[in-house]
Image (tube, chains in turn cyan, blue, orange, green):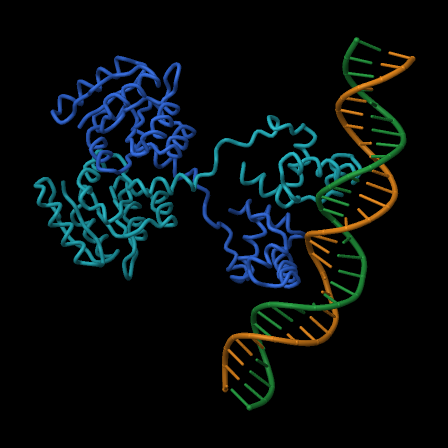
Length: 206
Length: 206
DNA sequence: CACTTTTAATGACAAATGTCATTTTTTTGT
DNA sequence: ACAAAAAAATGACATTTGTCATTAAAAGTG
């Protein structure tokens, strides 16, 4: 398995090289200290996997990964990071990175690398649990099952579009007072306090 | 590495057992045909990894996984599935599964299993690319580029969480009047009419 | 038909909201 | 230290909002 390592801390790179090569199945073809070097090394050696730090001087790992994947969409890039940073994880996923592993986990790096060469994606467990929280609940709130009528739902949708009571009443051919009464009942049913909380609820459960 | 396999298609289970055991590093301790059997086998053998189909008769893999993880929070459960199904992936992640791999990838299963025993999570690449699309883009709207200050943004976020002016003022150690003034300016800047429209704007541009 | 339920409307009220002009306080630059 | 600028507060005001008790009309049910 041929590797390139890129990390601005050369102690990390060297340690990784030593550990990984001691297994006998890995060859580290090159070591870079920033994004530019990573790109250059990748182009030169076309390794099986590029092991790269996210944060580096001059050019970040993310930028480098983006550029490499543009020219080599099948590139297998595995990010190494000191602690899990939500922002970066998501960006890394979007770009098309094959993994995101904490540096502390270096003892477990080898199986991860193997899995990546086989076309799979590997993440530290802590990272995945954080990730799942970022995904909005796919299960839409079932208003009908919670005693919300069709008319009430219509009002909810208009309020969640930002309309005032007056505007809702005009849209639905009701009096403003009636709309207020409806809203009052809706808020009671959903245990909310005001129309803004209703809008928030609507979008958070969408 | 000790395994339990659970799949309602026994042809699949047997094939997997054969393939995996031929490597010499894996022992399949038991084969189940549904969720109940998977739970029972897990409790009996406490395997390193439970390899399980998502869809099974009587009790689904998800249900079984949830029950097992309740009693064994460190259980390593890897889901096998025929096609990537967004709903299930997210649920599986939330529950705490360690992976989600397509059955077609059976040749690549072994490194995945190894990585999982080392405490990592493994996903088929197709699955991850689908997953990243489920995550909403963080702050698509760049408030700062539209003349919204840090303090204003803080207020926007609290209002978008459903807080009243009073509550916002307490959170930010400002007077209620000041919060009102800030809000008034924010609404002007974003051409909105009231706090509800602000919340709507916030979520629609998230 | 008489009845109940549902749906819609009123009016009264307190509270929250949004706007504005103005003042006070704090921060900043020189 | 001083003036200018920015941040925070005040007070007054009209409007909107949410709650509640009550009434009126319509629709459904026996």
